[in-house]
Length: 342
Image (cartoon, rainbow, N blue to C red; front, side, top):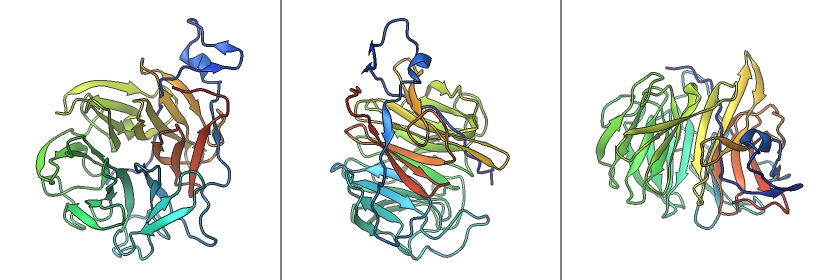
């Protein structure tokens, strides 16, 4: 099994902001704009019930009503080898976006090591479990609709996964699985779960991966993969043909996750550490030129604070949600009042 270090990556939103002393001039660069922080941390969010035990929040998604879904590990932590038993507590949270209050929870006695979460257009919840080596599709209230992979049995053929990390669902219902820690590939399936094709091998060249850790799609069906240990995002068409890559120019180790909002802005998160010292994560937005439009750290400033962002999602209002598996927190960042973002 590969090392589980997590590297960071840059994110970008195409953003035109009339900020501070005026509009951006033609001579301003993306680097100039990095100091113009447009987001702030929402304090006291979420508002979980007293005594609720939140585990490492590894996956985050948003449904059509704006509710936030979180896949977390409850009382379990990542240890190797993985435990053999299922987590007895609920592992999926549904939160109201504004207040962060708990709407619903489910998922007890179903998972060994939670990882990725994606919400599709029909509000179905897609999950990956790296301990079970499986991919799941559930209804919004927790009814199992589909299961792929053989429980506790890793492999690299059409019927098996090896620590799958994330899922992205196309408009036609077909879906892609980033697979993952044990394999270095992306696999595409039909809407009913039939194997279609795959691409990727281990390495750092075009179309190769060193832990494909997160995956998302744009409105044209192009596939974006957070190639974690290679500290980059790779872009492919819907058939797996390589289009281009976006390198993270930050001097950090990993890019764990990537997402695209409804306005087709591209975001990502990175992670930096040295030896055993956790330096923290940063949120990025990329512009149309694949350059960083803005970034901010754990408290809404450019400064990094000890944190380890594992997944990211953005709602219709531009609020950004991340799961911090170091601080065991779900963080919400909102656009600062008076700032217009596109």
